[in-house]
Amino acid sequence: MSFLDLSRLDATPLAHDPYDHVMVPGFVRSEALAAIHRSYPAIDKPGSFPVSELSYGEDFAALLHELEGPALRAAIERKFAISLAGRPTIVTVRGRCGDRDGNIHTDSKSKIITLLIYLNEPWESEGGRLRLLRSAKDIEDYVVEVPPESGLMLAFRRSERSYHGHKLYIGPRRVLQLNWVANTGHVFWDNMRHRLSAWLKRAA
Image 1: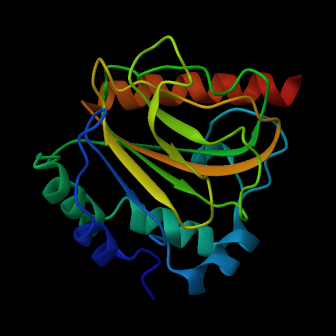
Image 2 (image 1 turned 90 degrees about the vertical axis):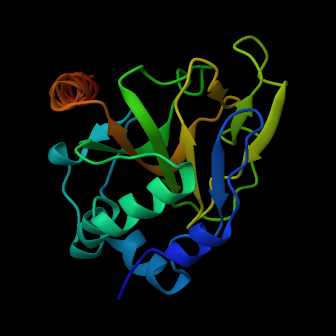
């Protein structure tokens, strides 16, 4: 069974305000969510962790395999009118939010497309909702607010104005992040950075 509903992505128009993005509720098929939740890696600290540093079940592994497969890559290429041929990927996973998360940023210049998949229960908190912002200075000056609920996908084109962030939230918040990046050198250094960060968090 395919975990991802690419037809939903194909049917959702690309939005351009405040920058190119597409948000797709139900992108992860509802019938797959329970199995994915059961096999999600146990993460008890804030921060992004490379998948190589985590233990997880077979269904989560199958989701990762599909995320990095050619069908999703082709769907993103169609949506953003971009070629990702030869562009490597980086996948990181979060399980919790801390008091240092959510600061406004644009993502690093090496990243071409950022794709986020949220895997949380219905979200009631005002914090932890990613906002697509008009500027780097005001978390309230947003165009889109994204509830981080199970199965929802957000993808956006990284640029010098792709500002995003969220209000303070401390607690469980599950999200996978997939990035297509410029070259393998960026994969190496990004993975090294995440491995160091993961080691420091475990040692804390």
